[in-house]
Image 1 (cartoon, one colour):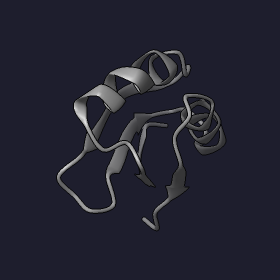
Image 2: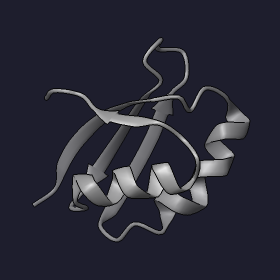
Image 3: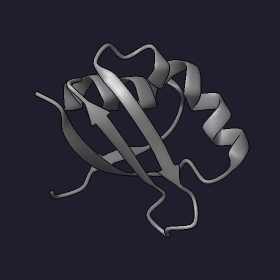
Length: 71
């Protein structure tokens, strides 16, 4: 079942987005993701069937901080 998840991150610029792209593109079940670098929380929004824990692991592996936001 597809769902939308939101995370607070420290992905704060275009270069950071480029750095995390190969990691998030590797997560099975992610159909769409984006980062709102204008939001103070640098919100990462992920759509798909991937597990929250897999997304967190990959973003951390890319070298960024991430915390789930309440739905």
